[in-house]
Length: 170
Image (tube, rainbow, N blue to C red; front, side):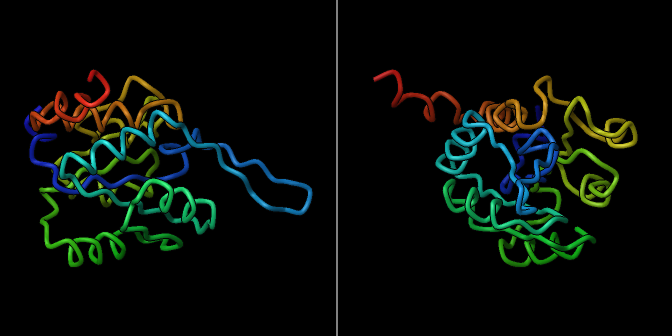
């Protein structure tokens, strides 16, 4: 896919994309999230292939900071309801254009970014308005391999997939 081939920065929403969208509250009111290890390795492989990664989430969570640190995601923007503000900061920090970015989101709050990026992606449970405007709807669900699917797609489009997997076949 030509749009995936142009991606220099892949941006991920959290709830509904990196997770299945569920929030579990513990007895002390703390929220927990569950992340998929396949998605995590996909992000790391994508980074090694030369594509920068970022998170933009309207919610604020120390769990996301921890997961981003575990995966080496350098650009993490949380707690900003208007995601355009975080996106502008990311573009400035990375020096890329909106057309060189991919974004995967699932709800109407993600539309402002999905309408700007060169490669707009959503998940099968994404809001109908988001699905209508996305360039690609993943087969896998959020928190269930959707991010890995997109990372693999970008690497294949850029011709880096085989090299990324080569160490595992040695």
